[in-house]
Every structure is written in structure tokens, then in C-alpha cells.
Amino acid sequence: MRIVSLSAVVCIGLCGIASFASAEDAHTIIAPDDVKWAPAPKILPAGAETAVLFGDPSKEGLFALRLKVPSGYAVPPHTHPADEVVTVISGTINLGMGETADRSASKALSAGSFFALPPGMAHFAYFDEETVVQITTNGPWGIKYVNPADDPQKSQ
Image (cartoon, rainbow, N blue to C red; front, side, top):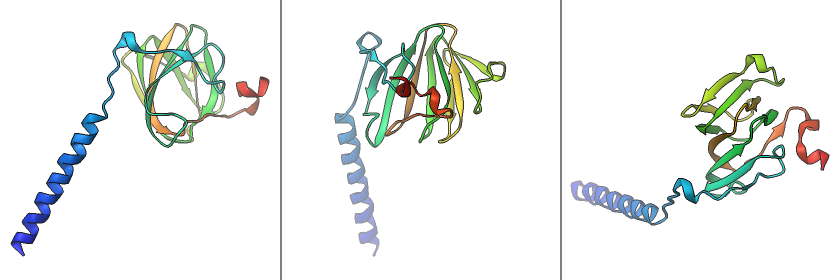
């Protein structure tokens, strides 16, 4: 019995090492100068740019993307279908919670700040300066605007 238990532990350990080795082979490294910006998807208000760093936001699974917005940009109240984990890379995001964009109830989060929101939590954002945030979550990514008329795709 003792030999079987030891064999099981050795087998599990070797499987773990094999998994670790394959994860290492599939690594991603992107230096700041190598970030490739493109126009943001039309689900966001015009003027933003995105760069997918890892994964595919349109498919199931983990992904990381950066969102760059100009000064004066705003995203009306909305929700997401999965957790939204955000780090402010540069600039400042003014983040507010709730179904109405009450700017007096927002909080300014400068570079280095972090926030995480659960699925379905209504929030909004506006920006007084060019800002870059990094969003890490599970796909497929989506936005549901509290007021359907705020959806930029409706006006196209």
C-alpha cells in the first residue's frame, strides 16, 4: 500500500512538471514599444484604441487587453458578463458605480490603481486625459449598456 501511494505521488508530480513545461513553452512577452494598437470594437464609443496582449476576447478563456482613450472620452453606464479586472497603466480613469452617470459620485483612479468588478455590476467611466487601462478577464467579452440607446452600434 505504501508503494502504491508513493507511486501515485511521483506520477502526480511528474504530470505537474509536464504541465508546467508546456505552459512555459506557450509564454507571451510584449515590451511597451511592441504593443500594436488598433481601433476599438464598435461596441465602445468611437475614439478608443485597443491592443490584445493575450488570448482572444471573442472566445472562451482568459485574455488581457489594453484600452487607450483620449481626453474627454466617456463610457456610459454598462455591465459585463464576467469579472472585470482592471489596472490603470497611465493617466486617470474616473470610475463610478450605478445605472446613472453621476460624475459627482465617481472616484479618480490614477496610474498604478487597480479595481475588480463582479459580473453584472453597473458602472461608468470618463477620462479627463489620455489614459491606458489593462483589462484582464475571461471571454467572450461583452458590454451591455444600461440604456440601450447608449450602445454605439445602435447609431451606426
